[in-house]
Image (tube, rainbow, N blue to C red):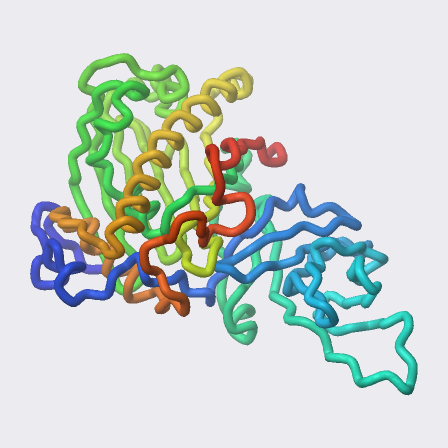
Length: 396
């Protein structure tokens, strides 16, 4: 990866306001389906149960048969298009609740109870998706199934380490996934969080990028103000003994990671892995899955006691970020185009990375009409999205 000066704006690549003058509008670029995306928590897909899921408008029916394997099928019966997520698991097959057509895990029809030789030849079945389980999540491969075997899952060594405790979170956000990448990478928005973390002064001390990734390193200095107790625990205040932290944030398409190393420490006190899974076909809403891996202190019980403080802290930070990115999405919806005038070279880089690795949206993504929704079930409508879900992973 080529190292570049943090303070140089790459005007020759994507000039500020280029979205207005010919560059592809990033909010009209879809996520590349040829990657592994989580669509459910493992614990929610129990033996004998069916769970509805979605990726970019493609509705899925996940079920776990008696063998313990999870399968993912198109969420429609080939007969009358009734959702298979309404169906019933019998052994290792999924039976449509309407006329009891039975499907194997590969999507093939295994039985039509009333079929006779005189009836018309039935369809072969529905599409199935490659599935893998890891890190307490159910991943599907919504793209070319022939590429699934050669495509690796993200590597998260801290998840399996006995030195870290993992919190899992899952949340719906009404915005294009690119806003989430920009939000995490651009730490200059700490003014938004000053009521929670105090006055933090971020200084970009390094950045680098290549065709598929963008990385930023910040030096954080706590310059005063009241700091949330959960933030202090996460930053290992009183353990490492410093007030200057180095934060490394990386978009490795399509995932994002964040590591915080306090002054005087040689290992991250916490690591975050996140992915923003598009929901509707217009991809103006996404489902955030994240794993927050927290290094255990010398007395592990301290972290157990502090877990509620950390949970409340992450909820407050996420709520503030959600407010901002959803406001950005509303502006795009109202204006029908991206009118951003970005000047930060890091964000110009990540926009280019997301553009070049994404795929054109196959649906119109113009201004949203009154009462319409591209977000899928449970995302649009009145009120706030589902509450932040934070669950301790299996103990390690």
